[in-house]
Length: 328
Image 1 (cartoon, rainbow, N blue to C red):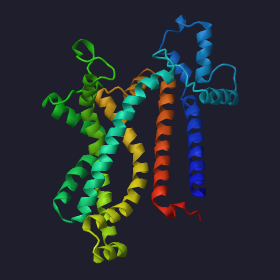
Image 2: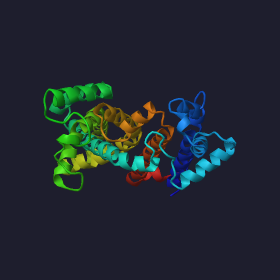
Image 3: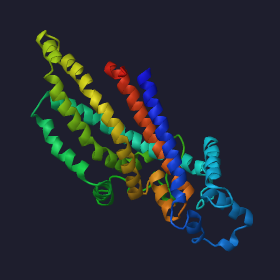
């Protein structure tokens, strides 16, 4: 329990630091974020009330910095992330529309990469110098390629020239749309079809780490005394491998937590390349439009997502390894 409380305390501090940075970053922009925004729009069309609201949003007006910070915290705890200046909609509404797409993409790609990579790593470590070892160079190559290049290669190979998958968007839209959005199989199948290449990009870029890490840990664990004794006593081979795999899996749980931030970053780049409906495309559009409230909201949500995933991985690690429950 003390170990869990210590971890929870650390993540609360990290979350508070993220909230504070999210407040100060727009106010550190040279010339102020408000001036940069007003320079890109027709200020003559603004009413005094709209200008006052913008000043409050971007840190202007007569409020001091401390008062602005307290107002920001109060609004944040009420779920108020501000209003998008380019979309004229609450940031929470914008995120509610975009987050499910990114969560679906990142979640499916990460789970597939973790499960497939871990399974291949277990088998490669069990049968050393086998055919599965030949997959490592290819998997490592995909991991070394930057996300936007890998995404472009898959789009050209299987989209433009291969014609096997769509090259952009989250589902068919416009005059060529053949599906109606909703919980119906034609729409779900269309979404899966559009998400195949973006998900493959994220999965291919991360699967090598799972394979290599699990393979090396399996090789080390299979030579441990308790594994050798279990095999010498006649325990079936598949049970020996299962025991070794469970212990070899612990470092992968920690690596899973560390890799979440990289996967999220990669998915944002991938969404931009494929014009996929998610926070990646939204933050790209917001940066072009100098829409600071949207950028702030996405930064905060992505940070909380990474922290939450790391906390969950820590809890799983503590549940699997009794040694982690001990507090020095």
